[in-house]
Image (tube, rainbow, N blue to C red):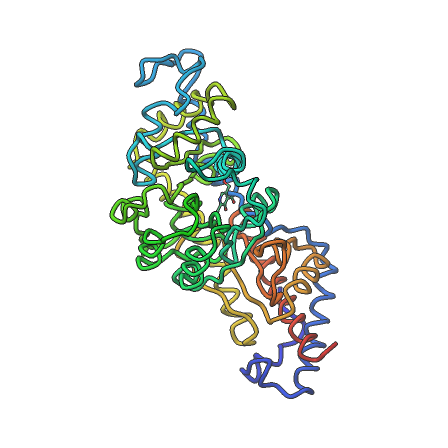
Length: 439
Ligand code: PLP
């Protein structure tokens, strides 16, 4: 999109806060005109949820041919995968997830098609069954609390909201959650029962926890014996850069501190093969698995082993998964480049927004001018571009600064993404002008 007039900031190379009222009024009228032009285009674009693009889904199509009516359905366990059995998952699939998560295969349960479902189940289990003998099930803890690093994943927060926890936002920086606050709350308050973590390429900021943060998690001394870390490693192998972030293995660190029962790790192939039709897994200490298995025994006879088999036959091993992820990276890198280049070009000179360039994951998290996130999202909607709701990255949808917006670049075709990002930047600038000018 090329505006009908060059914006003031292009001519003066000054941020909005350096402009005189008159100059900013001029910028405002240029942006308003451009906004009207965009509206006239009748766009219908979407950068809301982190879904793989069609091209990415196509990468896994051959997986559907790994099993057909002529296949051998007997796996390493010497069991017919078409039938009930093996509640922990088939051995070869447990081994694959063990490699992905960096744990022993005996500590892995392979579940259904969604890790979010396994997380929901885990919290649900701990609501009614004591996590540790002698502790109350969480539903009996009236003022139960859960720590929520922000900005974070709305669906995590939603699970603990659903189960009646008070959600406590924990600020994140480039190293992960603020561990001074985490340590204080966890060690002093027995009603703090857990924390949500996306330790690598966090949703939405793309932050990977530093070694120090992981070590401090492993060294926590919770007041509650049944405090647990929900370690959702959803993006553990989802690179977009040639210089990937490296995450310390929390289970190894916890073994060193004697805190093996603290973390419960999750991941899935949702953004590796097919979201909704992938395979999910959790890994935990034997003590935690004992409690969870007790519940699974009542919940299900066995999960979809044909899908597990299909995945293992397609990838063969961990190396096969990594090679597959290289193909995703080739598709995703240009998409992230479009988003980041447009932000650099359009928003950086205006000085009204900040963001981080992630090395992997599925999102770019943009902090627009304070008090304008909702307005920016509303303007984008009016212009035909749907974004994740402002505030969604905070517990209860309450972003105290009304500034964080999550951009999901993966799904739209690149040509649409370019247009959508131009619209986004125009709207963010227009909203900032309105705010500064008190319109
Ligand atoms: N965890 C995180 C951090 C996510 O961003 C997502 C999806 O966006 C999920 C979990 C959902 O995973 P699944 O499809 O395995 O339920």
